[in-house]
Image 1 (cartoon, rainbow, N blue to C red):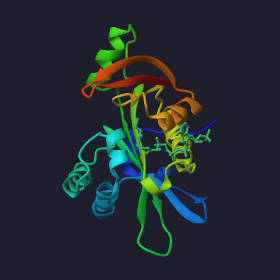
Image 2 (image 1 turned 180 degrees about the horizontal axis):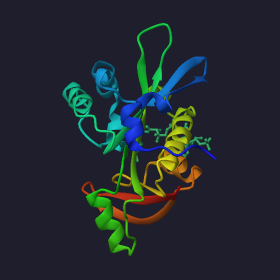
Image 3 (image 1 turned 135 degrees about the horizontal axis):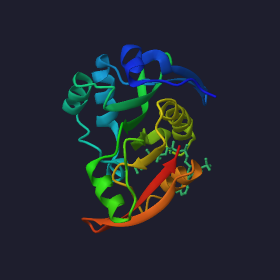
Image 4 (image 1 turned 135 degrees about the vertical axis):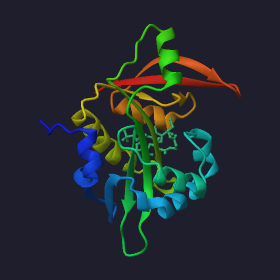
Length: 201
Ligand SMILES: CC(C)(COP(=O)(O)OP(=O)(O)OC[C@H]1O[C@@H](n2cnc3c(N)ncnc32)[C@H](O)[C@@H]1OP(=O)(O)O)[C@@H](O)C(=O)NCCC(=O)NCCS
């Protein structure tokens, strides 16, 4: 059984969860976003392609947003997990998984309409992998580690931030592989059909 963890411990020692692993001939570091990451995070945001941006929209993907997120880091509110490729060149972020430490307004409302109460045992996920690394297994490597941290922090359920688009077959397969189940649909302007999915941790 893994060791329990608190957000206070993480804030004091963010490297508590840092881990490196080999991935397709590269060395990947799994760690939390830090204040000094603004340049590398900006490169990741600006480099995200159109297809990814259509699927993934937690916030703007600009250099200004990267600066803001690094300046306003608050491990008691949101954990931003990175996978960083640390080869011979400059480090590059190859995955960025946001986990909000609690349910968010949109999900609270939609789930309550289905009779599901989201309380403080719930965390909220928004994952992304760099275009060139998608579909290669990197997201799964990161997800295993993220789920371990969230269990150690005592969270019992995980929901998707803004659900997932019903046409996002890869993401849906990815979530189902980790045990998420669909709990309902909702439509956003487009119109786009979306699934809400929840995981018991
Ligand atoms: C969704 C995402 C985070 C998953 O990360 P990833 O590194 O691509 O995922 P992995 O390669 O580890 O796993 C993908 C799984 O889907 C499968 N898959 C790939 N393409 C697929 C497709 N078109 N349809 C169904 N399954 C597919 C893979 O075989 C793999 O499953 P397996 O492990 O059972 O073989 C990533 O693809 C991504 O960032 N996509 C764009 C942004 C996005 O959609 N974010 C989520 C918004 S809800």
